[in-house]
Length: 176
Image 1 (cartoon, helix red, strand yellow):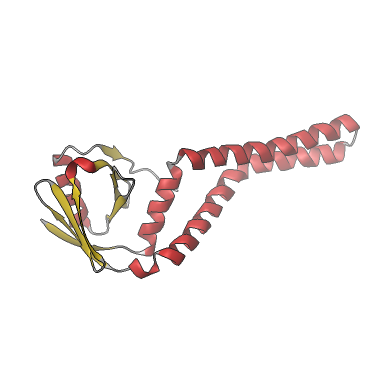
Image 2 (cartoon, helix red, strand yellow):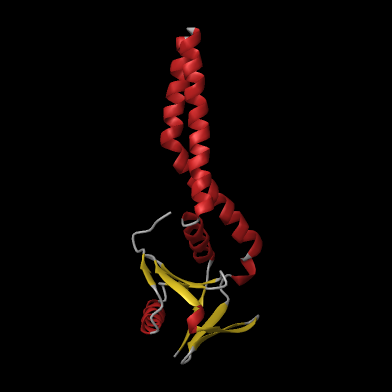
């Protein structure tokens, strides 16, 4: 069976954000950034209380609490902005490009205007299904993006891969 899909800016962005959200390195940056900034404000607050400068101490304490609550939102906003710029710089020529996916007995044939590739079924590591996409991870670290706006195609791709016993991750409630 052969399917044709196109990828848009939002598809690339969703994939980049999904990968970042599941990256231990990015999660460590979130934890460390939050810890260091909030810790600094709490330390300054403590020093303010010790020195008798209660006004500054309370201000630093409240700022620390504000950062504790707001930093994850800021971090996500910053990364979304970063990846949006990265996609605009590097993937613009691929927006709307027609790609075909064909399932063969032991491989997946991919083709677009730049060339073709053949992926062995045993090299597929996992399928992650989100609310709007299928992300098919390959053993080399690459991934295939199948948008669910192509409803029939995405369901058939998922069905075909599940028949090949590719590990499946149900992440339909994932959101950035």
